[in-house]
Image 1 (tube, rainbow, N blue to C red):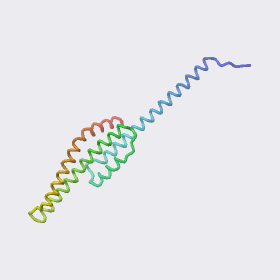
Image 2 (cartoon, rainbow, N blue to C red; image 1 turned 90 degrees about the vertical axis):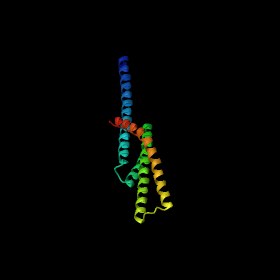
Image 3 (tube, helix red, strand yellow; image 1 turned 120 degrees about the horizontal axis):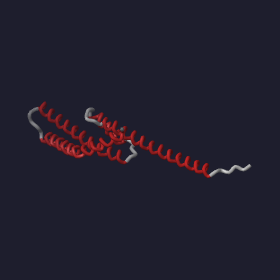
Image 4 (cartoon, helix red, strand yellow; image 1 turned 30 degrees about the vertical axis):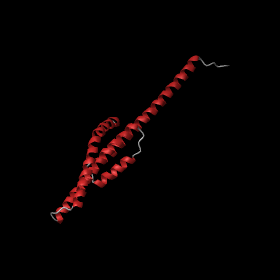
Length: 155
């Protein structure tokens, strides 16, 4: 006895294969979305570690870790780059300002007279601080906008 497959059986199999293919594609898409969400969360965590609450050494190390963070999505890379530059500028400004303050304090301890070399060094620290702060001020609005996007994505 020969069994013939009906066209209905064939159609059912094709529909099942099409549904399976669509499900696998959707699952792959979900995996990529999850991966993007995980990457966004890792980036947010790394950016929070660079916050201005830590010491200069801690923040410098956190900034280095941020720059070494392996990212795969273009918006995340752009966010890291702009936020890294903003935080680097702020950190450099704070370090230069601290150096200028220390130099001024050491001058007041040694006597009322400020040597030209000391004055030039202090002026250079202040100028470096001003430039770095200006860079940070330019980049922080873009960084904050990018961070809001990351937070939405991470939800």
